[in-house]
Image (spheres, rainbow, N blue to C red):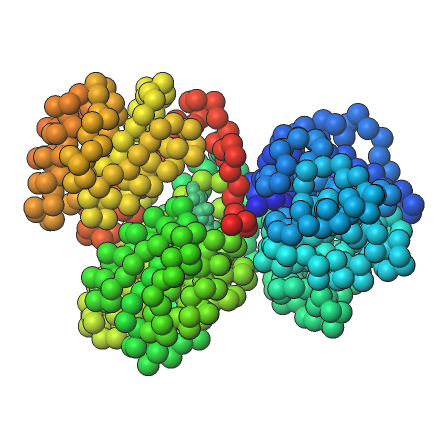
Length: 613
Ligand code: F6R
């Protein structure tokens, strides 16, 4: 949430910072701003709305040719998204500028202290408090780095702060607690950003900062300490993903590109996992004995990742015989869950930074549970704080609505379930090999679905003006229905609900009226009774006037009769069906958003990485 960039080097800082912000706009797009600093001169510009508004404003203003600068693209928490509340925020004398990601939880008390001392703050944000405190420290003689350390000791909550001062124009100082920040180390230039995407065109050498660390960058140096001033180490790493992965490459939207990338993302996630007849995870700090002791699994995740967890539960219980619960991360720690050292908590998070999931994970660790992360972001906080990690290899996901990360999360959970089955002996090696072989067929199956989705696009355009859409599923098709509804809500801003089809008669069926589109995910024919029950449910909606849009495996003649629109799916085992059934629903939502003239990649009010609770 919120994108942050800092730069010190030899290039015009404005160009570097703006280019960085363009790559981070997916993190928040309520407002944007920059600060440029030269000796004794601080220049700032900020605007409500998307980055384009800031770009326009900058065209009309003369600005210094600075080589030090910071920038911000905002997802508002405290204070409405207007020009006033946009970052950067300045200290009382306008010498220190600050951008911030996160929430300073004790800002009201700090603000009151400042106001009682006679200061008049100009915005409603929590960030401005930090700008004031920093500048006041420097007025008392501290350099910016020392000021940052002492201010951070007074702050509560989650924050990445990046600051610059016209008294020290050769440097940018930053601090992090519970919010992401990476350093990019170039040739005579240094970068700070929420995500490597902001500097990948300049350098691939990066450093990840630890919790409660302060970093000072100059063009040729990076100094890291803890909040008390003790020298500390960041973790150096090389960014190896391809720059093309962060570009649209001819697609109208990142979302379309990412939907199309799913076969490759799935294949990459499967690659190299099954060697010599044995499965392997990326990082495993738990012994086989500890894994054999697990008596319960709890999956914690949010949004789309939560739906991946709901799907995974079926395979985990079926293949490992370990009871598995799936819980919204934001609810988990507040209900006093029963966890002990024999519980395995699986945290699923594309970004690896989602605050709700991180807090659930920390709660689980405090209760001595074993924690395993499934994440798409190497080096992010959630994998770093886990006992074991399984990375999805979806590549950078830029569109706010998650697509390729979702499918790879599901397949990663399948791999994990098989890994546990292998260690605990609940499946024979040849059975595991057979399932891995079935998983390896999935990328091609997704390719086949993608080749036949044009009618789904047309359907979205036809249904452009409808007001409400229902999604029904049973078994693993139920979370697919939930995901279909979530995608439509977030992209098309339209009423959409996902239901377990059996629940329809217990209430929701009352909503159905003439012409209402109802998507139905039909289980494979091999599921016998379940398949037939679903056919009854389709009939129940149809006789009440629904327009039934049925996703069923190819050759399912029995269901075809009851479908107003039939979307054929490749034949796969039941547990793997969500990997193909989700794809037409993603395409439908994407097309619906475009047909309703919405911003497909940046839906209103949302941000990609939700680093506040
Ligand atoms: C919806 C979507 C969100 C995320 C959720 C968790 O399309 O993208 O619901 O799935 O915010 O994010 P991560 O996986 O980064 O923890």
